[in-house]
Amino acid sequence: MIVRARLVRVDAKGAAVGVVEAIAPARDGRERAPAVGATVFARGGWAGELADVAVEHVRRDGTVFGTVVDVITASPSRVDARCPRFLDCGGCDFLHVALDAQHAVKRSRVADALGLPLERVEPVVASPRTDGYRALAKLVVSADRRLGSYRPRTHDVADMQGCLVHAPEAERIVEALRAIVRAPPALDLRYVIVRASLDEGRAVVTLVTRTAEAPGLDAIVAALSAREDVARIAHHVNDDRGDALLGRGGFDVRYDAGPVAERIGAVTQTIEPGAFNQINPLGAAALYAVAVAGADAAGREVAELYAGSGGLSGALLAAGASRVVSVELGAEAVAAARASSSAWPGALEARCGAVEDHLDVLGGAPIVVVNPPRKGLSEIARTAIAEADWERLVYVSCNPDTLARDVSAWPGAIVRVTPVDLFPHTRHVETVLVIERSPTAVAGA
Image: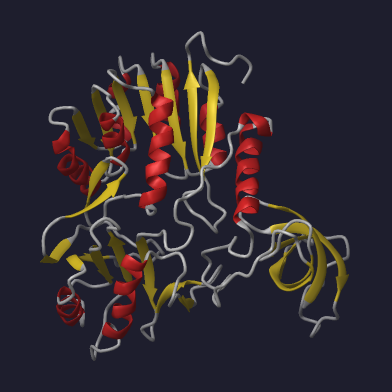
């Protein structure tokens, strides 16, 4: 079924939202008919457009969900999506829109979530690369041995060959894998993760299988290890029923041609299988620069929660912080942070464990930096931060909604909010927010 809709805004999930103006006749009587005037959420649309939308679902309350199939009146911001798999792989939901319009929506999204006037939110910091920026490629292996990603709301695999946002350093290895995985007579391969270093041009490849025996794995390892741009190959078993790439087990390194490191600004960061690293190294350098400027930690101690592989820890130390005490749950990430800290001997204490078990790091630290996952802080961590005696807090967030929830109960005033476009052509936005308790804080923020 096709409906014609006038689209008026873009929501937090990247869909254009509007109103149904006309309805084409239903193909059969089994389809729930939407109504004129109903709200519509359309992937591939943009504010200000009149478009035909293929209906995929009509909710009980009449709300329509679908995908734009024809644009009658285009937005001035619309551009050629350039990718034949646009909207198929579920990745680049803003690829059809000019970057300045993407940035405007992301800036407004942050302002709306925080309840701030737009002028209180700084312009979006652009990514140095807008194509080929993803040093991390995460791929599903289909039953017929294609490498791709799940189509939205399905378990069908869309091929991602020629992905525009994968860094060439990663995409070259992925392309080689396409041929390699077709060769073994039997194959147990569920996911492939390629983390390339843009600085070195080499990569860590993680092969995720359902079983420890993993038929076909030895042949894949042998073929990949013959490549000069593959430095390390790890095997990970994930037999969980869900869609998570990684399970609860560890990583068996099957091939090792030495450590791999990435340069992010002034920091050299070790890459380990299973460890969190920013997917856009050049964009991460810009993100860390904003966070370091907000922390203003020269000569002072910093408590850092959710530290990942220590990239921001290193940036703080490179900028003159006297000491960083960090907490991170992932053992692989902590190992990477410790390996990267040799440039600042004794200045980084990287603790491994849940943040909630190490909240004593907040005691006495004048500067606090947090960089949690999308779900934000737990109530325990949120309360402990509210009660700690810090002077300045820097929150690096990948979710404006949980950012707004977390900071709403904290003392002090918001003095800086900076969106960073770490994920061009997607709805996602990174935000650096700074809170101060000092007398110079802006009252009423």
